Amino acid sequence: MLSLGLYGATARFYFDTKETSQRNHIMGSLVTAHAGTVVIVTGVIDLVAGATVPSIAGIPYIYFRLILWAAAASALYEGSAAYWRAAERPFYVAIAGIASVVATTGAMTILLFATHLGLKGVLVGLGAGQGAVSLTMLVLVLRETGVGWSSTLLKAALAFSLPLIPHFVSGWLLRASDRWILDISHSSTEVGAYFLALQFASLISLVMFSTNDAIAPRLLARYRDGGAAAAQAFHARIFPLYLLTAAALAAGTIVVGPFVVYIASHGKITHVSIPMSLLACGFVASTLYVPFANAFFALKTTQRLFLLTMSAAALSVGLNLLLIPRFGPTGAATSLLLAYSVLLSLVMFFANRGLGLRTFIPLIAAAGAVLAALTWSAQAWIYR
Image 1 (cartoon, helix red, strand yellow):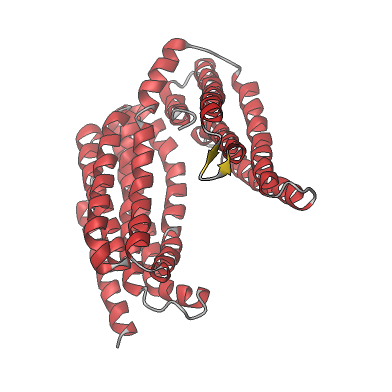
Image 2: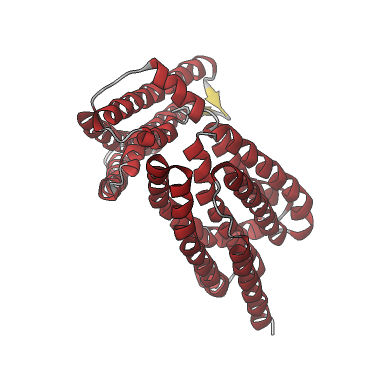
């Protein structure tokens, strides 16, 4: 939010031209605008909140100020990272990620144990460590592209990026509402068991979203160079392997996940097999929609994408309110699976209609049938 989604525009507008000097001008302008937007938006929020809210829930505002600027440092990171991802420089992205972890962890540790700042030291270390890495990345990118500015380009970038804000908020709500409602209506033990199962199953998303970070730039490059036909051919070649990987990870989660949770909880959590199986299938649906969503980025129709994610988020909240009070964690996992399945169906439909991406419905249905059969077999074995 602090960047108004401009890092998304950076990742997309990189592919507007193949001419190096023109592309450097576009990237320099957008990275500069991204950095300036983060600082200005954060400063305005801090100025207004600091003048009107001396404390929140009894906690002095200084703590929230430190959190806000730490978030700004993270937002600043995304602008340069988006450029390197688009340029297909995984080594740079990996080094930046490692440096970020080392710098933030080191700064927080030093300020926590070597000073008497306590929590303030942790927050200062978080912001300072991340800020140092983010500023270094920004300097490196601008040395390559040059500092630029174009109000016309910024206007086009904001038209592309602003719809990404409700899109990401909707995605966050879709993923988080189950725990809120579960926490209200059920015991902390059930919430903890569900959260542990969710964390393990979410490894599917971690792997597959990272995979899409590699897929998206290549699809956008194909679309730039060869139009819709080239993008369709690339998607048709890569999606079956993407689906197979996601399904294999889900199968492993269904079979191994309950035992991992049992061991991690020292034998205290024993009945998560059904929720974990449903979560695994739900996360497959959540990861499969992403390659189709790349079509909205290629066509620069992000205003349509956020309407779809908002609809899925509303459905998720409604299903959670309906299912969780009666079925608990199983209801929460079912809600996640249904909401992401609807989102996948909607995004597939519009990606096919807009860019002509092949839907692979029979292949997806076959993978779903295999995972359902594996879930049934796992339950039969566990409860025999």
